[in-house]
Length: 188
Image (cartoon, rainbow, N blue to C red; front, top):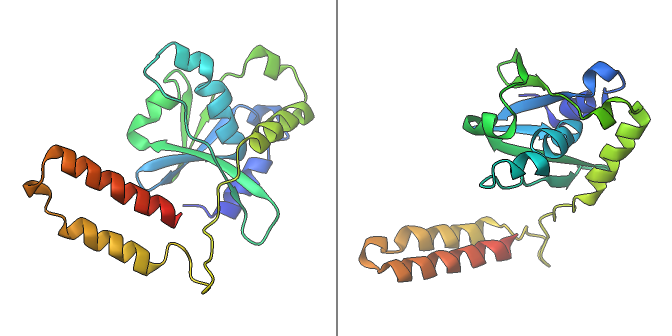
């Protein structure tokens, strides 16, 4: 898999019209991820609200924006399971394997976007990116330990492992899961 810095640099290289409609997907475990311009293309064109209206059971993709380490810059990405590729990218598009960890997909841009300049498309993408809330970083407590300290996670894991799931009612299990979710949420 490529390093994030290499991926972000690749996404910046969109100054030729032939690359404006290409989605770069990177395999990360059992998921595909698209960053920056590619994420924008998926969310606004390939899996847009209009596309989802044709299949009401489809939910919007979750877009994440993170801060680049040691920088004021940020980046956006979307991800989905590899098995769901045809759900998020219409099958009529051409898939080009780049290597074992990357495929490129050329999609058809709406006519309104085909006729504009690179600067206009870049600004539209940048505006979209800035509309995505910045993901919260893990906070440090007064001792300098991360809030997701091994002690907090270890306690939750111990609770999960020791919970007698088979001996409890479904409602007790649901309540327990809800409590564990709350504890995990407090660590973030």
